Length: 207
Length: 207
Image 1 (cartoon, each protein chain N blue to C red):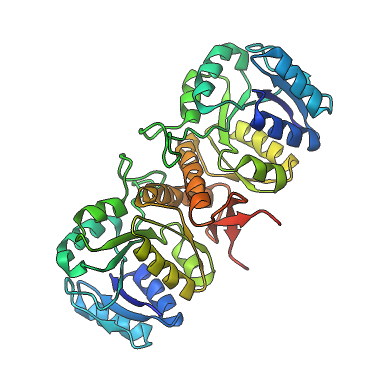
Image 2 (cartoon, each protein chain N blue to C red):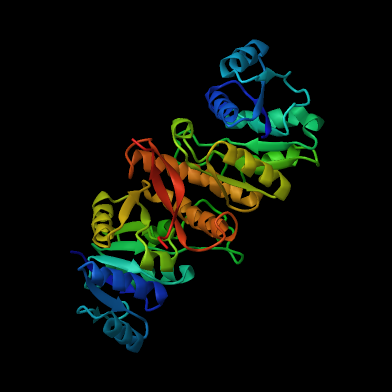
């Protein structure tokens, strides 16, 4: 069982919160608007609680479920409140046409988060390659990347509690290519797959 | 049935050549060293022929099976000999540690190929996300990208003749993210999968 704090009250916060509860984890909701946090916690049930925006999260794993341009400022705002926490960046920093990244440099929101997070925090990228309704209705592979092995192990245990398979792509520099895999997934949805009911996954060779 | 010319005589040329023959396609081998071309054509069997380096390829689809830094110069060397051809770039421009791309710009070998190819050629990126032995022993999804719909349709028909599923990621700008998917696949092999017997693929939601 993991203890999870979710920063945000939008659709992705709701989906991951519901999965987390169903997987037997504890959930805290931290929204900028406390009434939205309370509404979401109530909707989630399972003993979900609320926390104040910017306060020390109750959870060991802090999932930042915000639009990509809010992630780094929010982690910076939380600052030392995140010391010792595992910070999970799930964002997709798409450009305006969703066929590339908003940043042209070889970086990622997760790598930028690591620059503003307190020294004791472990930053992990994950979940961004999966469309929300696939996360909700399927058991997709969840790709992750990060430099802190202990933080990554915590996130892997959480992913397994959701009945999904964590797939470690390597160090935090791989977060850029996970963001690229998000772009690729959009491209496939618009072209080769022609729909949204799929996820990128690992297919093993038959033995 | 497609007619395929393969530029190169290395392992990837051998693997794709053998698959192409097995799939009922005609194959021409074009190596810089004619004796190597002749050896490979003989080994492939199935009526495989050889062509001179730099001459007009016999095949409608020209697969450049060279190390990444040889691809653009070779297409430039062929020049107008490739007019009207479908040029397939299968390369992975990995950096020296194979955890990123050799180019830091948002480009790809395929996009650079398009800059030097004759106006009438259709450039398609494909096959780069799959390890060679997986291509040989499995039926992996083959991701492709390109701007020329007719060229892409030709490559899709060829991929289907191999018993594999073509997965169109979109326009040629997606070749950059397919190269990134190659990097991601390396990362998964070294970390989350812990081995080489897999490929990235599309996993559909259960109906």
